[in-house]
Image (cartoon, rainbow, N blue to C red; front, side, top):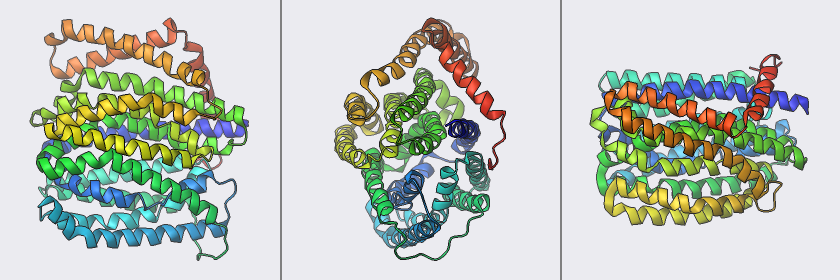
Length: 490
């Protein structure tokens, strides 16, 4: 038990540090590219990636999660799954090339043909690293995994900035999309040292394929529900509108996405190891969920309060329209932060079928919201999406925890303290911004607002609501874990 706890904490530290680096790299690159490229450049590439993103749901075929979740995995199973992933990657690359003319015709934009063809290479690069990534997760070697992903992100974003500076326009974004997966997969091969053998009949992969198949369908349904608005905006409102909407969504989603990625991989691996021990699974899940909530809530609320300042500072004045969309999408991202961790619980407990059923309800709900808001453009879509996700929050959570070791009281307690603290600190910060914000320029106003939000939030959470001991215990655990050297840390 102590060994798993130490590995989990070490993995959490590594992933969190990696996500901090990833966050800073993405923010810096976003700021630079927003000034070197136009909204239409982002929109052109988004028109393609939102469609090829459907293909990408099949790249892993859910088999990385199957490898992590399975109790025991043999060499034969790993090699067979590797070649299944490679076959899927090759098929998707070919599909990408074949459908390029239809994509260009659908959007009435001939430049999309070669963008789509170029992006096909990313499918093979991604497929080559799926099982190597799963091996690192299964062995709880999150330091090595984080290094691979961070280096790949840095190299890809550097390539994008250099290409944009050279004046190649939207091809800078294409370069980023292809370089990143290639570098990441190469790093994971080096980190694991594992070379796959030939695929073997009778290796016992059928249960893993069924698990992965369910996850793939689940991911596909969710993707369609969450991303159809981008297809609709690109088709009916053009590349520029999609570019503005896409930048606003990506920008406000960076903190939540980074936090969920840093904790989620570690939590899923740890919960999968204790799936047969209900009480340990319950404790692990609630601690991870509380940690994510305590960071997601204040960051998202602060983003909503300072939408204009964030967009102006990071994207520049030509992106002013993105500020309204950025704020309208804040409730959507906040709900994502609250429901995404439910996947840790469902998948680690073998409840992937329930996850699929939930997805089959979410997708029509989101698509309906997109269609209702489309007439009003990006703003209407953002508002309709946030309204739909807010209405869906409670039913989603209740459905996820039904019949599991997590009770409504457990989850209410995990959410209540960060939520109350976030609302209280938002009131304080809004008051300070209202009375003194006009005296400061955008950058100092943003910095001052962030400091006020952070201090008031921590004061409310740790002292007024008495949560100090919970986080001190977590801090002591992290210090203890960081003081021990992991034999295969990376």
